[in-house]
Length: 269
Ligand code: FPP
Image 1 (cartoon, rainbow, N blue to C red):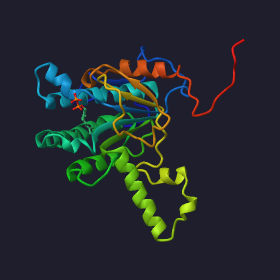
Image 2 (spheres, protein in one colour):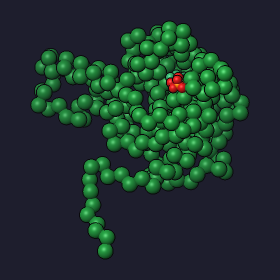
Image 3 (cartoon, rainbow, N blue to C red):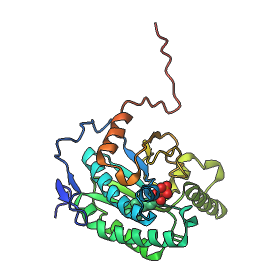
Image 4 (spheres, helix red, strand yellow):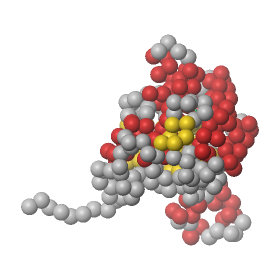
């Protein structure tokens, strides 16, 4: 199948989720005005489940559907890069049962959804630390990366066993060993040098960071890359998040005035 020309493709595990580039309700936003990189802290699975008398793990299952729904919406809108915080380096502190569930569920989800993501023209990239991550999960992530490596419609960064501080620490270790071996002169270390040693050196800076569930913090997600990100908080619990919610936040984003530390003197007359 020619993945780059596929315009309307259902998702096999969720036949109701379609990616349709010709859907009439997609907002028309000029490509250059769109956030080039959207990062999402998918929060609220556990609370959503408990509120309905369900177990937290059922919230994660519902969250996977929202994940595919959001990816479809991002592709439809024309967002070039989307990062999703699926498991943080701090999530190991959860109960062993929940950690086991999340690892097994991530493995299954990546396995089940890869073909759909591929048909949608999405390139999957794993971003995170290998240490501690289940080998079988890493195996599925690598397989998804390989399957989708030539896709160009959107890059999906699956952040699994990811932490912003861990990423900076790992970059510092790599830089320090370059210095130690004489290959790098400390006085030549710049922001560009540090960026080169991050997990995904070609990642675009985050333009818009979204967090669901009413919490208002970024929780160690893409710290370096989101230094100038616009922040958007939604009260919707992640399992209820829809592509329309994403489109709404992106539409709001285009009205933000970004200065990146610069300033313009324009006294009102
Ligand atoms: C946050 O809700 C959600 C997570 C920590 C896990 C999200 C994972 C998925 C949706 C599946 C991931 C699959 C892939 C593709 C790797 P929470 O548990 O923190 O909710 P709470 O704040 O209400 O407790």
